[in-house]
Image 1 (cartoon, helix red, strand yellow):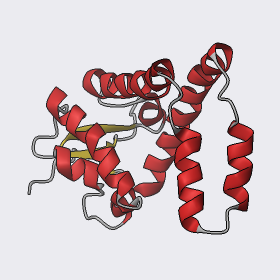
Image 2 (cartoon, rainbow, N blue to C red):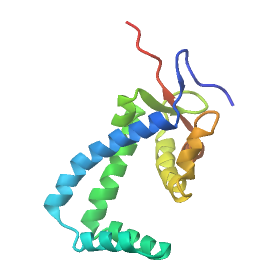
Image 3 (cartoon, rainbow, N blue to C red):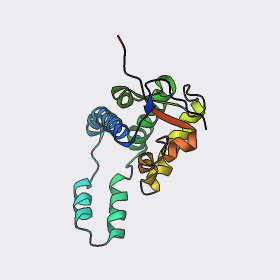
Length: 169
């Protein structure tokens, strides 16, 4: 395993990657939220959320949580899942970073060469998010313990996230 870091660069750890995620989430919510609110209202969402908070068993709470996030229609699925997915993968393909990664001066690179990730790696990395998430989120937490700060999604795609060297003037 070769080290792909250039002078002044380092692997991006859990907290800086979490900060990038928060920035991206705020941007996506600011764009998708008003559109979704204008197009439709999910009937009964408040009641489902109330039942979720008062559920006595974990299994009941999980079923109600799944129901709360279940797409109401094809339009709901496209707006809330497919549009953000396409935007994230496109940013990775063409900029090697989402806006959140750009704001934190981090970027995704091929773990073997240090070059930009391929389109295939970007798609694999996104699909790896689901593996990381459904493994009780451990795939994301793995970043905190891995030598190269790779989450499971990075390992699946053969990528690493690096913090760029400070700008010199």
